[in-house]
Image (tube, rainbow, N blue to C red; front, side, top):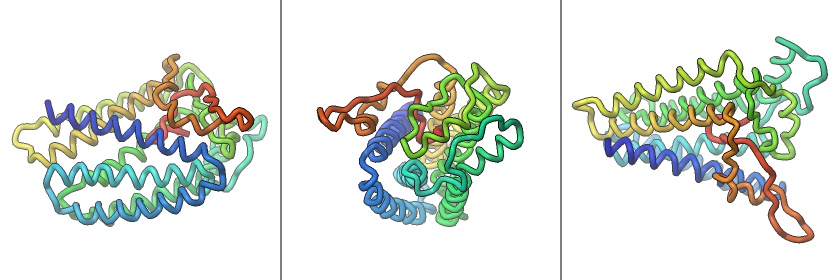
Length: 276
């Protein structure tokens, strides 16, 4: 149980700090985004090397290193999206009156380039870890991708907290593709599936005879799933958690005359797995 607690604490700290850091960088001037992406690209390349170097290492340290490296690669994809470098073929609000398949197609066009970028990144992560004994990094990336897709469907079908205020200025048009409802049919399924997967991974971590490195990796992936399910719940619970990432949001809205930060009220900014 101690290993589970440590893994959950680590995953939570990474989730909180990575989300806040991406929010902060995204809120800086557009001129700084180029340099942020250059730096993030160098770090992401190093993370891929870490994944390759630890793929045959069964130690606990290697499991944590692979977990962190996969988060870095995922964060690079999120930065590319939020800063407007990889979005989609459509960069305008949803036309009035679109329904059903036409609305879904238009929504998909707004993010298709980013989805392709994530797919390429997943292939790179898989290539770095393929046939290795340490698959923590690969499973971490797969879980992030799957839960993010789940969150997108929930935003499209409708939830209480769509996080529209969270979108950076250059992506505000995406809010027109979100639906606001108390609940949608997919939401309980996504929570149940995510919760069941989290329980399965944690059970693997607690299984008798599990190798320490494998148990640590399972605990980290299970903890990440717990956080992803929590972010899903943020979509329907009428409770704001903006204070969690207030430090990251401090760069978003500034009074240029006074030089003070003004943080707008936003819904839960699930950068790692759920937004937008």
